[in-house]
Structure formats: structure tokens, C-alpha cells
Length: 205
Ligand code: HEC
Image (cartoon, rainbow, N blue to C red; front, side, top):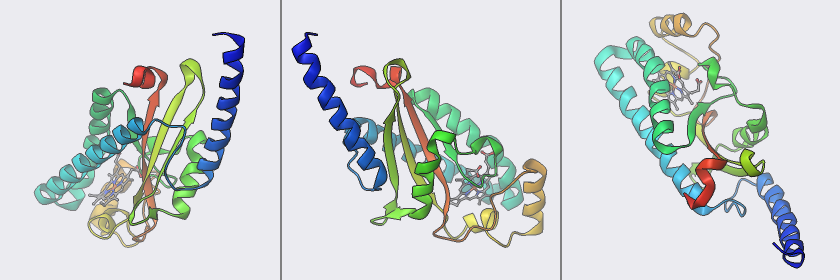
């Protein structure tokens, strides 16, 4: 790359960096520095993960009742996340400030974005989304974070303020450090976290 080409590129990158700082302050799309295709793929992946979790949860409640469904969830949710990650090349998981699974703790670099979702979990009738780019070269990464708002039933049975003793006992046994109760509909229960590393976002893949 010649010098007279490098200069405008450097300026363009500075402008884009400025645009990204602005985008990070508002919840609204679009996300000017992130390829819309990566956002679309993240959306689809988060939808699919959520769909599979909901189907598994519904089946578990129907077949085993709520206390049994707690146990089913505890093995199926991480297994589905691992499968979807392997199949997509992204790392998909759920994260929460007040989590049930201690592994779902919000990563340090995600906290301020999570706080923005907590302040406004729903936007224009849909779960709020934040997308940003960080790092460069081999440590470049795109992160997609989508709110999971607390809803009514069945969520309340396992995350609400008033939990049946049999369900509470099962939760306490599997998750002695559980922090994921006491939620009311409309609050932020957690978020879908999709992370694409440099290798998975190269070559427009
Ligand atoms: C049968 C009980 C049960 C029901 C009903 C239920 N959950 Fe959960 N939830 C769990 C368990 C158990 C985990 C921990 C799973 C794990 O170990 O990954 C969990 C984890 C989560 C997490 C991941 C973060 C964390 O705290 O570990 C979110 C987000 C979440 N639930 C949201 C919801 C929402 C929204 C609903 C309603 C659609 C719901 N849950 C219904 C039992 C339940």
C-alpha cells in the first residue's frame, strides 16, 4: 500500500472509530462499523438458540413438571449453546448480571453494554440489541448482545419473586449461588451473547 493511499485510509479509520463511539452510546441501529451481514447472522443464531431453548423448556415442563424441568434445563441449556457454537463458528451463550449459572457472569468488557440493555430492555417493541467491534488484527472481534426481557409464565415459576418450594429446593441444590430470582416481567433477565473472532469474520464469511 503506497503512502498516499495509507493516509486517507488512516483518516477514514479515525472517522469510523468516532462513529462507533457514537453508536455505542445509543441503543439504536444501525451499527455503522459492523458488517450488516454479521448482524443478520447473529440475529438468526440468537433466534435459533432461543427457539431451541424454549422448545426444550416447554417439553421438559410438560414431561417432568417444573422441578424436573430445572434439572433438564441445567444440562440442556449449556449443551445447546455448545452445539450452536460449534455449528456456527461463533461463541453463543447467555449472560446475566444476576445469574443462575455462575458461568453466565457478564464479561468485564460487556458490562457497560449490558447496563444499557438493563436501562431499556425493549426498543420499538423488540428486545434491544447492541453490536460493537473491538480489537484489531488477530484479536479483532465483533460482539452482539441482545436483551432477554423477563416475561410472565413460565419464567415467573423459576425466576420470579414467589417460587414454589419444590422448585426452589431443586434450584438451591443445583445452583447454590443462584441470584436469578425476584424478577418482574419487563425487567432485563439476561442477554444473548454472540461473539465472532477474527477468523470467523474474515473473508466475508
Ligand atoms: C423450569 C424452570 C425455568 C423456567 C420456567 C425458566 N428458566 Fe431460565 N433458567 C433456569 C435454569 C435452571 C437456568 C440455568 C441454566 C444453565 O445452567 O445454563 C436458567 C437460566 C436462564 C438464563 C441464563 C442466565 C442465567 O441466569 O444463568 C436466562 C437469561 C433465563 N434463564 C431466562 C428465562 C426466561 C426469559 C424464561 C421464560 C421464558 C425462563 N428463563 C424460564 C430455569 C428456568
